[in-house]
Length: 333
Image (cartoon, rainbow, N blue to C red; front, side, top):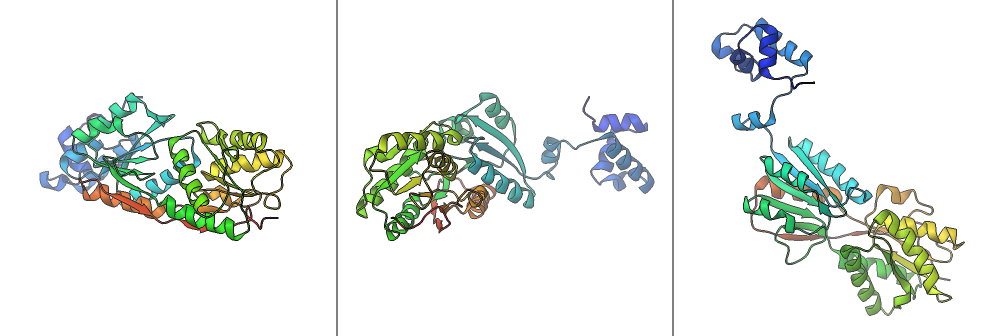
């Protein structure tokens, strides 16, 4: 079906396109249009499914800001949760979104081309994918913000979790429960390896044991990584099985819970399991998941503040994580 334009509406009514344009932009009184004519134009346009051109509205100065959004992994439930908050807050501020997604953390060049065609106020990236593809956007002086891991050298604004602070709380929690042998399961992704390194170093400094045989990385797809990594850990740990398993995300932890249940291991009676993110689903696992809560609402608010303010010099903000204690952790036997 052909797009309905102002010219289409004008032809339907037998009026000039300029009269229809002024009526639909609220400026018909300046050329002496009657209220009846304006009402008839608006009613006909609505009935025909007319939608104003965003580009034309921006040229007139009455269009809202358009923010580009790129999601590192559309299959990761955490990114879906962040995107829900981005949509809610953007719409509350009167902003529209132009959304693109990655395939295994590599952006589709067609999506990038579409983003480059937009008159964007800024671009928000959700996740830990590389930022080298942003170079054409950087040349345009666009404000670029990433919600995800914070690295000192990234050439974009960064807002993300203070992972060292969070894992410190988590390690203290499992140590207080009497756990001394710690395992780690993650996905085969840089961000998960970084979390492994952070958690392991904190655990060792706290006097806990975390040998190589207690570490497993599953697939690069987080929905599979937990199950694969959990099965791998069961196979390689032998009789000296860890009493607590720290997972790099809630999604990974859900797979680990499934692998442990299939192997007949009871959580938390025989082994405790923790996550990272505090997905809504983490309250529904069996048992409910102890995890680190990421302040998604606040991170999103601050990211949109940066874009709307048009800040150019990159900044980095690490936000504290809250330890959420649920039924998946218990005292070590």
